[in-house]
Length: 578
Image (cartoon, rainbow, N blue to C red; front, side, top):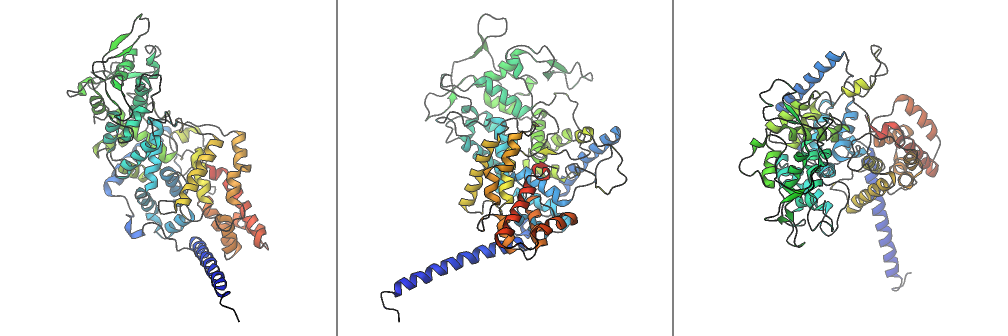
C-alpha cells in the first residue's frame, strides 16, 4: 500500500505519462491529417473565389491572341496546357517562393479541377506570404541585397513596409511615389531606406545621388543608363523618346541618343538631400546644388534637375523629388508600367518577357503581351493583385514545358526558339532561396505560413538564410540565368541542410512520419511524390519504389523513405521551374 510520501511521486509520474501520451496523440493526429484527404488550411474553401472575374479573363484573352498570332507568324505549334498540379506549383514558386505543402495539395484536390488554378491564386493573394515574397523581389531591385550602413539603414523595415503596402493592395504608382519622394527617419518612414541604403560615412551625410539615379532608371523605368555617368552614348545603346515621338511615324526621328547630361540631371534630384543628425532623418538641403565634372571639362558644373524625356509632363514641380515621382508614375510614362509588368511576369514565371529585366527599349520592338499588360495595368490603377490574376489567367502562363511523350503528332524539333516565343513554358532554375524554401517545405507535412508556430517560421527563415549563404545568392541579378556549379550540386547532395531534413526524425521530418503511418507502400511512395514534386507518381515509379520498400519495417523503412526523398529533391524536376 503506497504511503503518503510516495503518492506525490506517483502523481507526478502519471502526470508525465499523460503529457507524453497527449503529445504523442497530437503528433499522430497531425500526421494522419496531413497524409489523408482532410487537410485544414487557414481559410475554408468557401471563403475563396474559385474563378477570375470576366474583365480579368478578357484581358488574358487579348494577351493570348497576341501570342497565338506571333506563333502562327513564326510557324510554331504551341505545347498543350500543363496539368493542374504543374501550374499550381508554378504559382506557388512565384507567389510564396516554394512548392505546395502536402496539406495544400490535398486541399486543392477537394476543389473541382477546372477551378483549382483560380482558387489557388485567390487563396495565395489572401495569404501574407505572397506580399512578403513580392516585397523581397522588389526590394532587391530598389535597395539591393546588402544590409548597408546599420545605423542609418534597416533593410528589414523597408521590406516589411513594402509587404504591408502590397498586402493592402496600395496602387503601385503610389508606392513608387512614396519611395522616390521619401523624407524623414528610416525608422518612422521606412520608405526612406531607399535613399539611406546608398549612404556611407565618407559622403558628408548625403545619399549617393549617382547610385540613386541608376536604381531609379533601372527599377522604375527598366532603362540602363548607367554608362551615361561618364560619357555620352557613342554606341547608341541608350535611346530616349524625343518630344515629337508621338507625332512621328519614322522610328529614327522618334528617338535620340542618350547624353551624359541626361544621367546627371536625373541624379540632381537626389543631390540636395542631407542628414544633419540620425534622429531627424533626411531633408532637402536649401541653397545647395548638385555638381559634377562632365567629360572633357576642367571644372565641376552646377546641374539643374531634369528628366531625360517628355519634360512637358510636369506640372509645376519639376525641380524636386515630388515632381520626379509624379513624372515617373504618370500614366503616359509607359516605361513605368512596362518595367513593373516585366518584373511581375519574371517573379511568377521565373523569366521576364524582356531580358535583361531592367533594360526595355524605349520604342520597342516589344514581345507579345507586354504592351497589352501595360495597358491593363494603367487602366486599372496600377493594381498589382489584378496584374497577378491576369498573368496567371493567360493560356501562355499555363502552357506545358513539353509535349506529352505519347503525342505522336509532335514532330517539331523543340529548341530555344520555342522557349523565347513562349510556345513552350521556358524552364528556369530555382533561385537559391527558392531551392532552400522548397526543400524545407517538402520535408514538412504541414504548411509553414502565418498560422504556423513561431518556431516553425524561424526554422524556415534560418534554414533558408544558412543554405543561401553556403550555396551563393544571385543578389540583384536574380533573374539572370546562371549555370549550377559542382560545389552547389555537392551541397545539395551531401550537405547538412538536406540530410537534417530527411534523416530519421519522427517529430519533424516528413519522410520518417510517412514511413511510420502510411497504410501501405504505395501510399507512402505516392505521398512522398506529392510532398516533393507536387504530382502523383507514375505507374512505373510506383512499381520501382514500392519494391524498394517491400518488407522493410521500423528504422529500415524510414531510411528507405529518406533515400526516396533524397532522390526526388536532387532531381532536375524538383530543382527547376517548368
